[in-house]
Image (cartoon, rainbow, N blue to C red; front, side, top):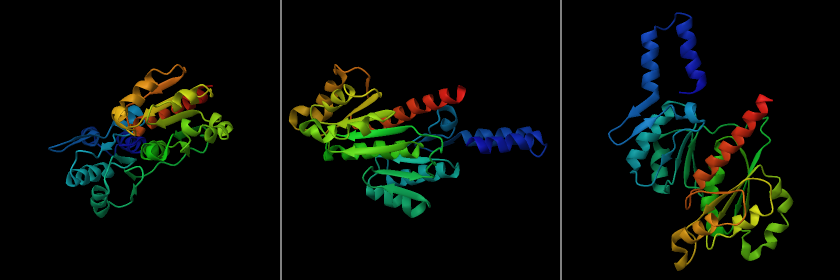
Length: 257
């Protein structure tokens, strides 16, 4: 339930058009939905500013369809990550006004509009084309949460000159998300050149001793450049949520001035 729907119920109670018991029942039923395999948290948006997001891996197509359908009834943003094309087709066959972002492997319904007064921007840097799927997950997530996003692809440390001629643009970011596999050096380089907070995303891209992203993760955690926060391996979604939280705090502080 979003703020507008909540206000509508409370105004009905205030005007005598809705009994208190009826309002209590409406609020209680909208806060969660229990299925045999899932308990949906419809109140998360009001608590945190971001909705509960469906993690597609490990769920059957039937489960994903049922969960997505239940969440659509509540309105607002509905988002599912790590969704295969086969599962996406099953959801799209049942649910209307849903878009599948192939590169990001994400299902999105009811995308939020950008705030007209939101001049802040998340800029995402992807070290290589092989890291792009994780970068796209971060991009779509940040966008549907209402943020402006720029993506710079394939500008890793092996050809650092590719980043240097975009440096003025990159420095204009309010928050940077830097996605890299292999040895994970790119966030350290970027953080040494910018004022913005840097959110580092290690990816599982790399050869044998990369250990599925662990080498990149450890490299980022051990960076000598200050101002870096590190999320889990391949977690573009988590990086975008962190960037959104940072930007929303900035907006809130501006409104208080």
